[in-house]
Amino acid sequence: MTSSSTPYDRLGGEAGVRRLVERFYALMDELPEAYTVRQIHPESLAGSADSLFKYLSGWFGGPPLYTAEKGHPRLRMRHLPYRVGPVERDEWMLCMRQALAETVDDAPLRAVLEKAFADMAEHMVNTTGAACATSA
Image (cartoon, rainbow, N blue to C red; front, side, top):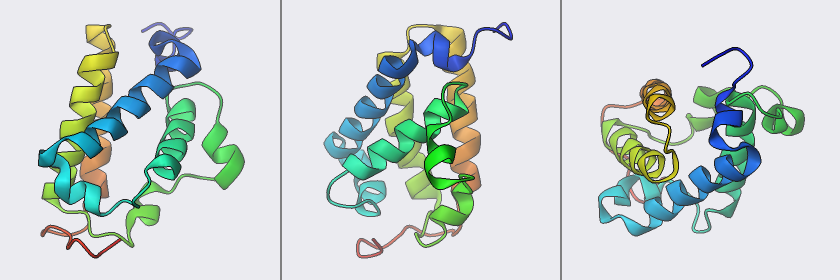
């Protein structure tokens, strides 16, 4: 990537980021393999999708929508109320990898994003066990 070509731009701006987020949360609802991670989310994923879109907008080099609204993301701190273990991490990444594969045609960009998401998901792990279904 050149310094003038951000992931946000390479994804197609707002529309590309929205497409990725929408597919990610659709997969979380559709895939039985994502059951455990889905349980730590609210019944409606609309708020989660909105937050992720705003966060990714800035993280990918576009408008800093999340920080403008909520301040510093402090992702790990914001996820501490939820038990996030290896199962949730892996299920989250299953959905993200598939969403990236389905929405990002640029293979080098997809690889960079997958690695960045994997690092982020690993950072969110705060327990060694799976969350119980009633944790959210």
